Image (cartoon, rainbow, N blue to C red; front, side):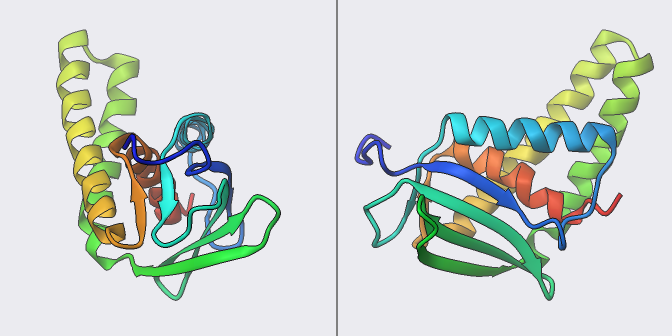
Length: 160
């Protein structure tokens, strides 16, 4: 996405603690890594706005995903509200395979771990593409940004 300048990026991500439950240690670690990685490298441009950088506030209200985008100084830019229903199946399958993966890394053979990891990555890519499609025309983002954002959106389902 070379057409975007250095200001078309996120510099902060906030997860609403009231709508996002605490996950397992593995899930919390994955969430923290995704947030860190997202800030370190991303392409994020709300359509029709070109004066970032941006801060993203992620929450859930009434079964809907809320992506509240603000400028670095906190000034509101736009909020997008999306139904989480289309993501439910892929998130549920992703969590199931993640549980298998975390169990496997403790006890399974390397080839079994690799097989499970391939399935995990495939589901993660599917969810990332689905999220990217849902945000088309609203927010421009590259696949790497969509992958990290999918991990954080999945956090809405982690109720611990």
